[in-house]
Length: 398
Ligand code: PLP
Ligand code: TYF
Image (cartoon, rainbow, N blue to C red; front, side):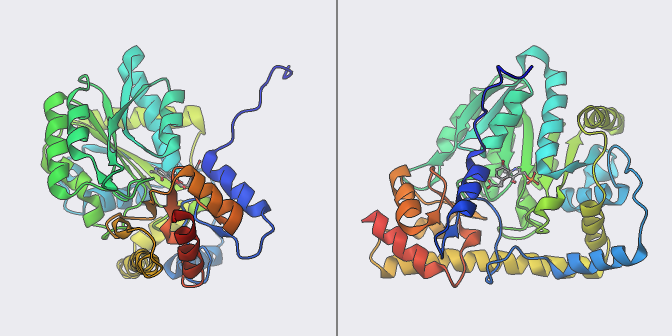
């Protein structure tokens, strides 16, 4: 049966972690995968999450199935986080939200559903570059993939003129995938006025905005990092999609917590969208799991815990900012070429500008792991490894 099955290529990011784990050198450093690591070198268990978890365990809850679209409280609280408590879209019942298995399943379910709606000519435009799984998911769902200019290597910033030009050429009906904040892999984001221009263009060209929000709270804060969604709402855009993930913002990577929200023209359209979302989930994995969503809903549903969680998120954010500044300062002190742009990039990642050859030297000579594209996870830097990383980056940059 399986004799003709060929070996599939591994995931470039998770595969790198496997190589890292197998590396026997002491002091090895993983700046490859996008995981926030605290100053003690551990993935944090947020105190608010721990508190809810202990209370849950104490009640000894039975483990029935969740509904196909997940935990109702989780979906309602997610909507408020994404669209704002005062959202007119929510008041009008125009948003269909379902809990999903991480942000990844939100993308996958949306891709299947949108393909069904668009039919044979389904097209999606993705930023160049983007998270590799964006291409994988939408290609697998049957989309034709297009890209739009985004990153400008010479400035280490945004090619905004190129982006507008490319979006302006897309056929009406094309889905446009946008990173809400903390762009993966570049760390380069749009400001509010750039968002406004992009949204106006999408409206004018009748393109479907699809916002992927995997890092809400990792740049400026919950409200500010939702600017794209808030401006879409304010613009009166008839329909758009949001896929969100709590993996990073709650440090719940393995619990697979995310959601898909689809905005329709009115309450009736939203109800039909929700029925289609549920049909798609059922065909894929039947229903989501309980534990992670209960933790998130437990924190977001208590005013006191939510305030404390935002503070915990703020601490992760400040630590990342401090690590960016620390890296830039140390590199400057060591006489490396100018890396000041790292301070202007946002979120967990920085496109360091290091070449593939330099990245390989970091790995081979210094046991420091980064992606071939030059992407480094600045959220994995800490006071213990910063000097080592700065010295090695300086050495390979000479
Ligand atoms: N979208 C982007 C841009 C991401 O970086 C990630 C990272 O994991 C996801 C979606 C998926 O999130 P999750 O890990 O919750 O599936
Ligand atoms: O880009 C990253 O590193 C994170 C984690 O298949 C990740 O988004 C990477 C690869 C993957 C799933 C998650």
